[in-house]
Length: 242
Image 1 (cartoon, rainbow, N blue to C red):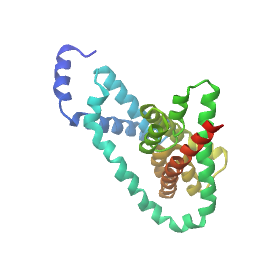
Image 2: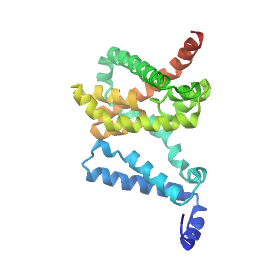
Image 3: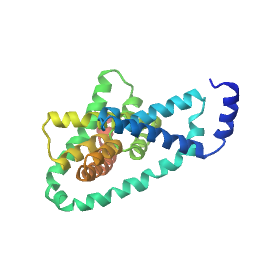
Image 4: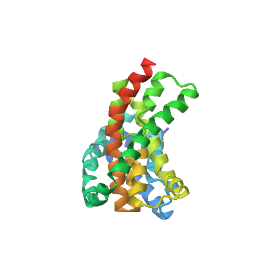
């Protein structure tokens, strides 16, 4: 709880729609500063740190999420233009993309199916209900697409959003170590794998490694969203038929 006078000040500030945007930017800037100080250690992902800071701030101030989002929704709006802008660095890698078209297509299909089947299969073995399974299935797709898929197939979009963020953060944190262990050296291949597995947050991490990795990560993120939107209804119909 907030002490009396500070609470009065907070109530006044909370009336401003820019407060949510301001604390979001400050939280991310603080998290990114820590990330830089740690020599860009992927385990200190700035998105994860910023989320923890924001949750703590909202909890401490007893602020409802909707109140916060009313001010921070401009950042949410920018997700669309930012995603479209990923086409620019991808165009610079067009020659390499054309040469790798077939292997990338196979990798996309394998990655998309693995993401869906592994998540749903493990949750099913642990006793999760149907609604939870349907919410979990699109967790490797970027949030706007994943929430739309979850809504159409009978999942809970808000739960899907949380699972998407968790997937993205964990992928951005662990991808380097997994790919190093598998001895994957090609930056385009590494980026594509990260984009398919951990969507936008993984793509942001890939861009910090190199423009090539980021471009292919953006491609993987976009294509996985499209493919999952097609595969999920078909797989669900097949599952219910069996």
